[in-house]
Length: 593
Image 1 (cartoon, rainbow, N blue to C red):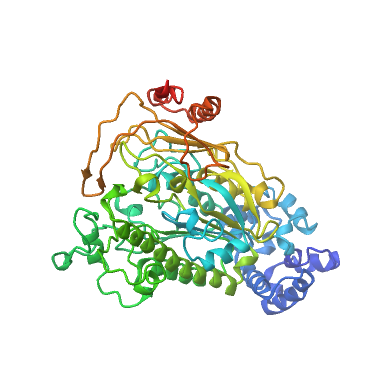
Image 2: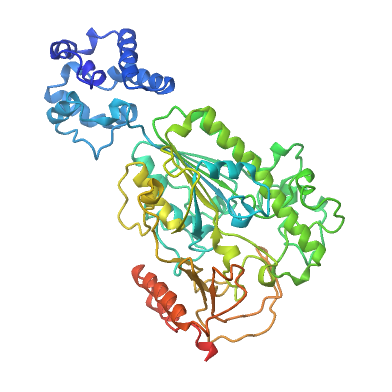
């Protein structure tokens, strides 16, 4: 029976197979392993893979008693121990029927299970989320920051030039990713429903080792259930205004005028006391922990690792040598955590320095991401690992006169906010170094990774797999990309943005609310300055107006209505609450009539 596992090519006589199938007591593990390596050499396996298969062969006798193979007792034993069998041999339930052992034995001896031939390996998955990373600050999309390592990854990956955020901002986007279901326009900054299957749960159920490494503060502090399905969780503490260290709060000085930076900056600076080296910063600590995780788990037969870095989200306080790359000699206030709203509360010099701080944070993050990428190469993981690099949304730096992210009744979702970097490395390298204009969104990640790993997609997933784009079979994916925030959020409405890659519509629900003038808001969580209520639908022709400065909705109302219909179809397909759906019914541009 043992040689039925090792000689799937059918070269050994059947008599030998029968003789060795009488029981494990007749098999010497060392001899079996040595002969197995010779067989594996015929399959052109690399040394690391051969070692893994050798270990499996030596462990095989502990799975079940081969002498009882054809007995009812042996059949029952296999049923009760199928999880361990999967873990050792990488066979998935959907491929074989373990309750029919005679059929399974025939398929095995005939070489019907390709996974044992060395031609198919379990696909590992590594996802890296960089919060608030603008696409134009990555070399593959723009030149506003130095990102040599992201550029290096892009040269080995397929770059999606038209990837867009879905549900906005941080937590709603994670919900899209982890469940494959739309959150906009009906899900606010709420806890993720516990009855929804998550991506990590799907992989873990198939025997994958799952890990979550993050410093994004709201992952755990607000009980959002985003950690469901992860077998190991590493939380790097102290990001943002997280209430972690409090004994030094009274000793921290404001880095700038109190009316220009968020109140959470004091607690953040208290959390960061004691840093001596770049490796002590939060972003580097996240990637260091990720490298350690890979070193511990790279030999596992299939793993799923999610790395969620809050950097380059503010606060921006990288080591000075990064800042000097972009704005040397600055001597003004350090606006490392600037307020949201109109950007005119800052001087031109301050705004330029804020841009430099952000670019410096991006460059530091890029350096440590490069170390992770190099670690993958050293461990041989590029041969069977899918690697996804993306962001959840961008950030405004004076774009359209705005600073930060849009909250409440101000700030449209323009391209710098919803156009995100998105690149995928796949081991077959069919599309390596290429760029496609396919429209993709976060909800598409779940079904795509399942398809690449050979897993069934759970019922209820609304995203669309773009695996065919990765293989080069097609470049067409979505007809429209839609980004937005919940209508009934306590911070007020934020318009939806709909694009087909050529035309982009910024659509306001609740257009009956008129402009009320500036409205400053300051809370424990957010500080927003000079926030007007602006509710004017806008249409942009992107090939000639990438900066979205020329509203052509009056000249092209038919294009606006076409994009609006796509939004209504999404609302209908996701079975949105009728009261919310009704708010999106008015045709775009009617306030210009």
